[in-house]
Image (tube, rainbow, N blue to C red; front, side, top):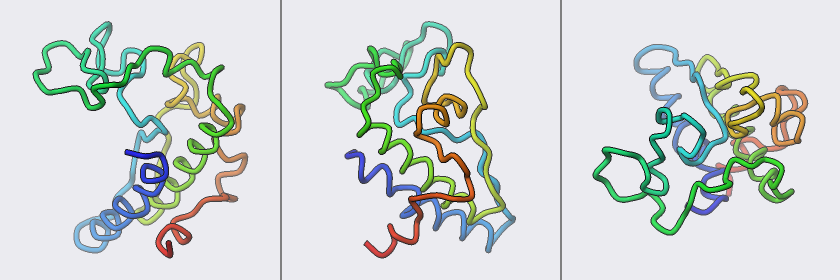
Length: 148
């Protein structure tokens, strides 16, 4: 899925689902979200088990999510380009906006040990500029997405 589609997905799909859930059933809170767009994070699927993304997850008979992709180096945050960080910031802020259609959200974790999973590490995201400095002041919202 192209990055612009991934960034808009929370607004176009999840926000509607949260509105519906909160209206028809019970207020809904989103917990443990991140800016990961794959399952390549270290130990995410278990110790040494691989990932669905590149087809290395043990005991899974399905095809890789991205047959021509690799998890190799994907979590090396020191190589994140400015463009990629802008995408991550947009994706995070739009998730926050969409999730506030319910009763709120909380991020996966404040900090991962040695920043081993940068897509799940709020402190690193904040330090590196792909998390808002103030979660109440965001550049990217669902309002702009819906009108596209």
